[in-house]
Length: 278
Image: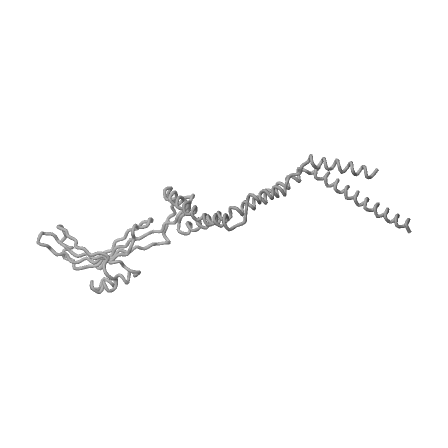
């Protein structure tokens, strides 16, 4: 019984030693392959390491890039493009001047009219003063969103009725002139309207001026710098993300193959293996 127990014990030890030697052989093969293909392995490790660091870098700058992008998109919506001279569409702008006497005058230009606002003027009849000058009353009204046909209908209204429709005049003054044409002296009270229209089917393409682009770029930089304070506060005060620690951890995890160290390990394992297999 004792001999049988000893036999089983010896057999168990022999099997364990065999497994141990197989494991050692496998480890030696792994070390040999790492040394043999060290250049390829280092390239693979460096690629994965750099990719993970890049992803962390993207995580670091993403809130700031998103903020800058949103502001740039806002500028684009309102017709501005920082750092780049944008090509803009300029529609044909039309200024039409007409009165209740049948006179009509047009002006057309592709740039916008400064201070364009639809206006209705009431001109009183010229009256001669004792000093030889002619004077008349001029009243200026702001036209509401009226069509040209509706404005023409106003020409038939009395001045008091006109105030009920358009409200009080923007300004009212007396105009004096010592040299008035006879045909103007004969004129009775009359109305004159100035309206502005835009023809979107008739346009030209123009590149933004350098000065305008510089102003837009400066404004964009200032607004973006202020807006970036929000993600900066979140990153420093509320977030646990630490870019430096993340990079250190990645570099520690993905270290290149150390050939001298692997060679030394392989030599030791071979010596142990040869000793155990004698």
